[in-house]
Image (cartoon, rainbow, N blue to C red; front, side, top):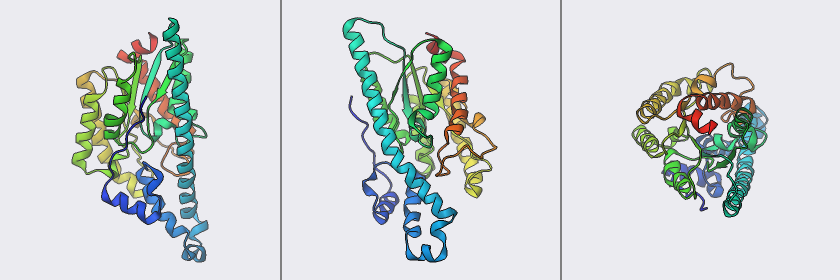
Length: 294
């Protein structure tokens, strides 16, 4: 199976990468781009003199750097996991043995589980455990997500990998869009979002986006109306296509303490528990229930 191909980034992102010397780090979320630039300040002699380096701001940039390193580790673990799953299915097919039900995950760093202590501590790992427990079947997961992915990355890079599978999966879930908010103009964001919703397979469970009301200070408050519009598009198009929606926005809610990781952007393992609950609820209703129980 080929790996997802990267897409271009806006000029301001390339400029930030050049400034911070992180151009070779691959896809980065908006928070990583900003924190990479901010870390240049916290490493300066001025930061040492003023105390910024050891204050909340410095600890935050250190947290972002910690998750940046984890991103590489998580991706490597999921790649090895995917290889084992595909090899197992190939072997069973060749020997004429029945296949375990397969769940394919599309999305960004939240699908990678970034922010949890390990990749299986994210919503995918937690929901997989629940899925196996409730159905009594040994579900396998193929995680095609990529940290920092935009919706057009999913459409152009991850969906083609899904179509390469020898047999269609029993379940597909897709969650992306947060990274688009700062990387793309509104017109592009909504066009790309609609394009993704039109391209996913029938029966795909879509994840809506979290509403960070009361978090991230003024940024969180400003983002709520915009994300609400994006969620409205997700629900409208999903309804037209008969796609279930896992309502992260309704389950991942205050109180916030303990629900975010050290970068104050990605959920913690406790936060992902809310995401997993939203997904499990969606799987228990409509077409998703039939796929999970099959």
